[in-house]
Length: 264
Image (cartoon, rainbow, N blue to C red; front, side):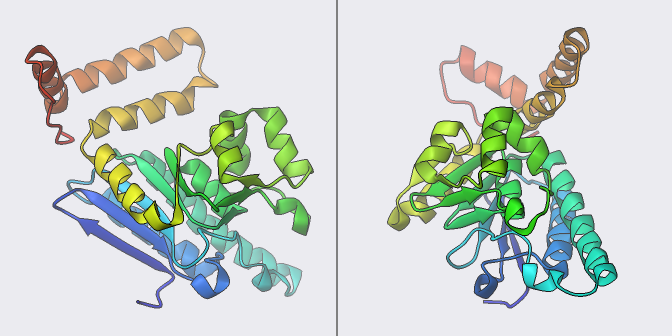
Protein backbone atom coordinates (compact mmCIF):
# COMPACT_ATOMS: atom_id res chain seq x y z
CA UNK A 1 0.00 0.00 0.00
CA UNK A 2 1.19 3.52 -0.76
CA UNK A 3 2.51 5.62 2.11
CA UNK A 4 0.63 8.69 0.83
CA UNK A 5 -1.60 10.11 3.61
CA UNK A 6 -4.64 10.03 1.31
CA UNK A 7 -5.53 7.27 -1.11
CA UNK A 8 -8.15 8.06 -3.73
CA UNK A 9 -9.69 5.91 -6.44
CA UNK A 10 -12.58 6.07 -8.90
CA UNK A 11 -14.36 3.20 -10.66
CA UNK A 12 -15.91 4.51 -13.89
CA UNK A 13 -18.00 1.34 -14.24
CA UNK A 14 -19.94 2.06 -11.03
CA UNK A 15 -19.31 5.78 -10.53
CA UNK A 16 -18.09 5.06 -6.98
CA UNK A 17 -15.09 6.96 -5.63
CA UNK A 18 -13.20 6.03 -2.47
CA UNK A 19 -11.07 8.25 -0.28
CA UNK A 20 -9.02 6.48 2.39
CA UNK A 21 -7.19 8.20 5.23
CA UNK A 22 -3.85 6.43 5.22
CA UNK A 23 -1.84 7.04 8.38
CA UNK A 24 -2.75 3.81 10.19
CA UNK A 25 0.23 3.94 12.55
CA UNK A 26 -1.15 7.28 13.84
CA UNK A 27 -4.80 6.13 13.72
CA UNK A 28 -5.12 8.37 10.64
CA UNK A 29 -4.63 11.51 12.74
CA UNK A 30 -4.58 14.67 10.66
CA UNK A 31 -1.37 16.49 9.86
CA UNK A 32 -0.79 19.13 7.19
CA UNK A 33 0.00 16.55 4.51
CA UNK A 34 -3.22 14.60 5.13
CA UNK A 35 -5.33 17.77 5.14
CA UNK A 36 -3.79 18.99 1.91
CA UNK A 37 -4.14 15.54 0.35
CA UNK A 38 -7.82 15.39 1.26
CA UNK A 39 -8.38 18.81 -0.26
CA UNK A 40 -6.67 17.73 -3.50
CA UNK A 41 -8.66 14.49 -3.65
CA UNK A 42 -11.94 16.34 -3.12
CA UNK A 43 -11.11 18.87 -5.83
CA UNK A 44 -10.24 16.08 -8.26
CA UNK A 45 -13.60 14.41 -7.61
CA UNK A 46 -15.39 17.69 -8.26
CA UNK A 47 -14.00 17.51 -11.82
CA UNK A 48 -14.74 13.81 -12.27
CA UNK A 49 -17.34 12.92 -14.90
CA UNK A 50 -19.71 10.14 -13.97
CA UNK A 51 -19.30 10.47 -10.21
CA UNK A 52 -22.20 8.70 -8.46
CA UNK A 53 -21.10 8.14 -4.84
CA UNK A 54 -18.13 8.92 -2.56
CA UNK A 55 -17.00 6.64 0.28
CA UNK A 56 -14.72 7.84 3.10
CA UNK A 57 -12.80 5.20 5.07
CA UNK A 58 -9.74 4.89 7.25
CA UNK A 59 -6.87 2.46 6.83
CA UNK A 60 -6.14 0.16 9.73
CA UNK A 61 -8.11 -0.02 12.95
CA UNK A 62 -9.55 3.52 13.12
CA UNK A 63 -11.57 5.81 10.91
CA UNK A 64 -9.71 8.89 12.16
CA UNK A 65 -8.45 9.90 15.59
CA UNK A 66 -8.74 13.66 14.97
CA UNK A 67 -5.79 16.00 14.73
CA UNK A 68 -2.24 14.77 15.28
CA UNK A 69 -1.76 16.38 18.68
CA UNK A 70 1.95 15.53 18.68
CA UNK A 71 2.41 18.37 16.21
CA UNK A 72 0.72 20.94 18.43
CA UNK A 73 3.37 21.22 21.14
CA UNK A 74 5.81 23.67 19.58
CA UNK A 75 6.03 27.42 19.90
CA UNK A 76 2.60 29.11 19.81
CA UNK A 77 3.27 30.84 16.49
CA UNK A 78 4.42 27.59 14.89
CA UNK A 79 1.43 25.70 16.28
CA UNK A 80 -0.97 28.36 15.01
CA UNK A 81 0.57 28.21 11.55
CA UNK A 82 0.27 24.41 11.44
CA UNK A 83 -3.32 24.49 12.67
CA UNK A 84 -4.23 27.13 10.10
CA UNK A 85 -2.73 25.04 7.31
CA UNK A 86 -4.62 21.95 8.50
CA UNK A 87 -7.91 23.82 8.76
CA UNK A 88 -7.42 25.46 5.37
CA UNK A 89 -7.22 22.02 3.79
CA UNK A 90 -9.89 20.33 5.88
CA UNK A 91 -12.47 23.10 5.57
CA UNK A 92 -11.99 23.36 1.81
CA UNK A 93 -12.27 19.57 1.47
CA UNK A 94 -15.49 19.41 3.50
CA UNK A 95 -17.10 22.21 1.50
CA UNK A 96 -16.09 20.57 -1.77
CA UNK A 97 -17.35 17.12 -0.75
CA UNK A 98 -20.66 18.56 0.45
CA UNK A 99 -21.10 20.41 -2.86
CA UNK A 100 -20.74 17.28 -5.01
CA UNK A 101 -23.77 16.00 -6.94
CA UNK A 102 -23.17 12.61 -5.33
CA UNK A 103 -24.01 11.16 -1.92
CA UNK A 104 -21.22 10.91 0.64
CA UNK A 105 -20.83 7.82 2.86
CA UNK A 106 -18.53 7.41 5.85
CA UNK A 107 -17.52 3.84 6.61
CA UNK A 108 -16.42 3.95 10.26
CA UNK A 109 -14.26 1.27 11.86
CA UNK A 110 -12.84 1.91 15.31
CA UNK A 111 -12.68 5.49 16.52
CA UNK A 112 -14.12 8.55 14.81
CA UNK A 113 -12.81 11.22 17.17
CA UNK A 114 -12.40 14.96 16.97
CA UNK A 115 -12.16 16.02 13.33
CA UNK A 116 -12.71 12.38 12.39
CA UNK A 117 -16.11 12.64 14.06
CA UNK A 118 -16.65 15.89 12.14
CA UNK A 119 -16.01 14.11 8.85
CA UNK A 120 -18.41 11.34 9.77
CA UNK A 121 -21.03 13.96 10.59
CA UNK A 122 -20.40 15.65 7.23
CA UNK A 123 -21.36 12.45 5.41
CA UNK A 124 -24.92 11.90 4.25
CA UNK A 125 -24.91 8.39 5.70
CA UNK A 126 -22.63 6.57 8.15
CA UNK A 127 -22.12 2.82 8.15
CA UNK A 128 -20.48 1.78 11.43
CA UNK A 129 -18.71 -1.40 12.33
CA UNK A 130 -20.31 -2.80 15.48
CA UNK A 131 -17.21 -1.91 17.53
CA UNK A 132 -17.00 1.70 16.32
CA UNK A 133 -16.89 4.60 18.75
CA UNK A 134 -17.79 8.25 18.22
CA UNK A 135 -16.47 11.06 20.40
CA UNK A 136 -15.93 14.78 20.10
CA UNK A 137 -12.78 14.81 22.31
CA UNK A 138 -11.86 18.50 22.00
CA UNK A 139 -12.32 19.16 25.71
CA UNK A 140 -9.47 16.73 26.42
CA UNK A 141 -6.98 19.24 25.00
CA UNK A 142 -8.88 22.38 26.02
CA UNK A 143 -9.95 23.15 22.45
CA UNK A 144 -13.18 23.84 20.60
CA UNK A 145 -14.72 21.76 17.80
CA UNK A 146 -13.54 22.32 14.25
CA UNK A 147 -14.15 20.92 10.77
CA UNK A 148 -17.87 21.59 11.14
CA UNK A 149 -18.65 19.54 14.28
CA UNK A 150 -20.45 22.42 16.01
CA UNK A 151 -22.54 22.94 12.84
CA UNK A 152 -23.38 19.33 11.99
CA UNK A 153 -23.81 17.82 15.45
CA UNK A 154 -26.67 20.00 16.81
CA UNK A 155 -28.52 19.55 13.52
CA UNK A 156 -28.29 15.78 13.79
CA UNK A 157 -28.82 15.21 17.51
CA UNK A 158 -30.07 18.51 18.97
CA UNK A 159 -28.29 21.06 21.15
CA UNK A 160 -28.78 19.11 24.39
CA UNK A 161 -27.15 15.92 23.18
CA UNK A 162 -24.40 17.91 21.46
CA UNK A 163 -23.65 19.54 24.84
CA UNK A 164 -23.46 16.11 26.50
CA UNK A 165 -20.81 15.03 24.05
CA UNK A 166 -18.78 18.22 24.37
CA UNK A 167 -19.12 19.06 28.07
CA UNK A 168 -19.20 15.54 29.51
CA UNK A 169 -16.76 13.88 27.08
CA UNK A 170 -19.50 11.41 26.24
CA UNK A 171 -18.44 8.76 23.76
CA UNK A 172 -21.06 6.88 21.78
CA UNK A 173 -20.99 3.23 20.82
CA UNK A 174 -22.17 2.30 17.36
CA UNK A 175 -25.53 1.27 18.83
CA UNK A 176 -25.91 4.57 20.68
CA UNK A 177 -24.92 6.53 17.57
CA UNK A 178 -27.57 4.59 15.64
CA UNK A 179 -30.16 5.50 18.28
CA UNK A 180 -29.14 9.17 18.13
CA UNK A 181 -29.44 9.31 14.34
CA UNK A 182 -25.72 9.72 13.62
CA UNK A 183 -25.35 6.22 12.16
CA UNK A 184 -27.62 4.79 9.47
CA UNK A 185 -26.57 1.14 9.70
CA UNK A 186 -24.31 -1.14 11.75
CA UNK A 187 -22.41 -4.07 10.27
CA UNK A 188 -20.41 -6.86 11.94
CA UNK A 189 -16.64 -6.76 11.56
CA UNK A 190 -16.54 -9.73 9.21
CA UNK A 191 -19.26 -8.28 7.00
CA UNK A 192 -18.32 -4.63 7.13
CA UNK A 193 -16.61 -4.32 3.74
CA UNK A 194 -19.44 -6.13 1.97
CA UNK A 195 -22.06 -3.98 3.69
CA UNK A 196 -20.17 -0.80 2.76
CA UNK A 197 -19.91 -1.91 -0.87
CA UNK A 198 -23.63 -2.74 -0.92
CA UNK A 199 -24.61 0.64 0.50
CA UNK A 200 -22.37 2.51 -1.95
CA UNK A 201 -23.77 0.49 -4.86
CA UNK A 202 -27.34 1.16 -3.77
CA UNK A 203 -26.81 4.92 -3.60
CA UNK A 204 -24.77 5.02 -6.81
CA UNK A 205 -27.70 3.37 -8.62
CA UNK A 206 -30.13 6.00 -7.36
CA UNK A 207 -31.12 9.49 -8.60
CA UNK A 208 -27.91 11.10 -7.32
CA UNK A 209 -28.80 14.62 -8.46
CA UNK A 210 -31.94 14.40 -6.34
CA UNK A 211 -29.86 13.29 -3.35
CA UNK A 212 -27.60 16.32 -3.75
CA UNK A 213 -30.57 18.67 -4.06
CA UNK A 214 -32.08 17.19 -0.90
CA UNK A 215 -28.78 17.83 0.94
CA UNK A 216 -28.74 21.47 -0.20
CA UNK A 217 -32.32 22.00 0.91
CA UNK A 218 -31.71 20.44 4.32
CA UNK A 219 -28.54 22.48 4.86
CA UNK A 220 -30.41 25.71 4.19
CA UNK A 221 -33.63 24.90 6.01
CA UNK A 222 -32.50 25.96 9.50
CA UNK A 223 -31.78 29.55 8.47
CA UNK A 224 -34.31 30.05 5.66
CA UNK A 225 -37.81 31.43 6.31
CA UNK A 226 -40.59 29.11 5.17
CA UNK A 227 -41.62 31.23 2.18
CA UNK A 228 -38.05 31.39 0.91
CA UNK A 229 -37.55 27.70 1.52
CA UNK A 230 -40.69 26.82 -0.45
CA UNK A 231 -39.25 28.79 -3.36
CA UNK A 232 -35.92 26.97 -2.98
CA UNK A 233 -37.78 23.66 -3.11
CA UNK A 234 -39.65 24.83 -6.21
CA UNK A 235 -36.40 25.79 -7.94
CA UNK A 236 -34.72 22.47 -7.12
CA UNK A 237 -37.80 20.48 -8.19
CA UNK A 238 -38.12 22.29 -11.51
CA UNK A 239 -34.42 21.83 -12.22
CA UNK A 240 -34.68 18.11 -11.48
CA UNK A 241 -37.87 17.85 -13.56
CA UNK A 242 -35.80 18.69 -16.62
CA UNK A 243 -33.35 15.85 -16.02
CA UNK A 244 -33.10 12.48 -17.74
CA UNK A 245 -33.38 10.76 -14.37
CA UNK A 246 -36.73 12.41 -13.65
CA UNK A 247 -38.07 11.31 -17.04
CA UNK A 248 -36.81 7.78 -16.40
CA UNK A 249 -38.29 7.75 -12.90
CA UNK A 250 -41.72 8.78 -14.18
CA UNK A 251 -41.54 6.24 -17.00
CA UNK A 252 -40.56 3.50 -14.57
CA UNK A 253 -43.36 4.40 -12.17
CA UNK A 254 -46.00 4.44 -14.90
CA UNK A 255 -44.61 1.28 -16.47
CA UNK A 256 -44.49 -0.52 -13.12
CA UNK A 257 -40.78 -1.27 -13.51
CA UNK A 258 -37.62 -0.32 -11.62
CA UNK A 259 -36.13 2.83 -13.16
CA UNK A 260 -32.51 2.87 -14.28
CA UNK A 261 -30.94 6.13 -13.12
CA UNK A 262 -27.75 7.54 -14.66
CA UNK A 263 -27.20 10.79 -12.75
CA UNK A 264 -28.14 12.91 -15.76
